[in-house]
Image (tube, rainbow, N blue to C red):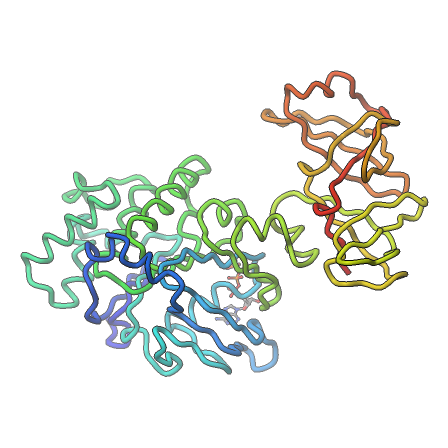
Amino acid sequence: MPAFLAGIVYICGDKILESTTVKRPPLAAVRNGQQAAAKRETLVEFRGVKKTYDGENLVVKQLDLNIERGEFLTLLGPSGSGKTTCLMMLAGFEFPTGGEIRLDGKLLNKVPPHKRDIGMVFQNYALFPHMTVGQNVAYPLQVRKVDAATRADKVKRALDMVQMGQFADRYPAQLSGGQQQRIALARALVFDPKLVLMDEPLGALDKQLRERMQIELKDLHQRLGVTFVYVTHDQSEALTMSDRVAVFEHGIIQQLAPVDQLYEQPDNQFVAGFIGDNNRFHGVVETPDSGLCRLRMQDGSSLLGVNVNGLGAGHAAVGCVRPERIRLLARGAAASNGVAARITSLIYFGDHVRVRCALPNGDECFVKLTLNDPALPGLSEGTPVSLDIEPTHLRVFI
Ligand SMILES: Nc1ncnc2c1ncn2[C@@H]1O[C@H](COP(=O)(O)OP(=O)(O)OP(=O)(O)O)[C@@H](O)[C@H]1O
């Protein structure tokens, strides 16, 4: 174990990197919700952080981000958007080209990984194959010279925490992927880290197991109150687990918000399109007034929506709306904020039917109907309909 890596549990590929401890309250103290009271305290600050690997292209551009103590924050974004780079800078395995990172107020820029009190879990659990589960979990404590009795107690608690208490004597090869990831998690938590960083930790698991582990991780986070920073490109994973999500694109946070706000009030077209399902209507802004505006489409029809960017009359714009926020009405029925459309197809999705529609201006959109929706039997390809949308649910962007 290189000396510069002692202090962090860093699990990546077939490597496990480890480090020294910093004195902190034990897990049990954290567990009783003591952290909840301190929830709005800032634990981590990124101020004006930039990163380039080649001296030319900034893969992280001017990042300002506060991570609150005890929160579950997810960095979400497409491949190459800079999420892992941010995590690596926080862990100390990459250094910022500019700006400052603080942990508990302490400037981290020059602090090596082993002096940061951070646990990490990666996609490849990377347990030591020649050690039993118990020995793997004990390893961070051994490095920290924790005495044998305390070590045994902490290992038992950490394994019980991830419901793996009865597997202490097994070797990693005798465990399933999900079980190995639980052990990796126990190992990252056993030394009571201040912060736990996870980079796509469930990426190698099948869908069913991944979804079960998502619930377990969220539950564990709530019980422990430790701050989790989680990287994923899977938006449903981010929505399921996080308190807040930072959406990355091209090294910039496009929006940082609680999950419901992110979904209901996206700040821009990218966020509206990246999180959840989305429909887009193209038009020109008319009569902007007190936060709303009318989006006039090429065929003359129009919809009222939220003027998110405060666009002036005549500005080209795109209206975005979630499919579940569109009411499908029979053509001619009174719509408060409606537009004419024609059904192009009905696709069965098991738990709902996706009704695809074409608008006269050439835009396409879809609506989701539950299988017992009374309107469904009357619909088929070619049926003329009206799409009715509450103005607050149509977000008009530049
Ligand atoms: N060690 C490195 N050397 C050079 N370029 C790098 C290095 N690590 C990452 N990059 C580049 O930096 C950019 C951001 O990469 P990063 O891994 O942070 O993105 P990401 O959002 O985590 O992507 P993914 O979800 O695919 O892991 C990418 O263009 C990537 O090619």
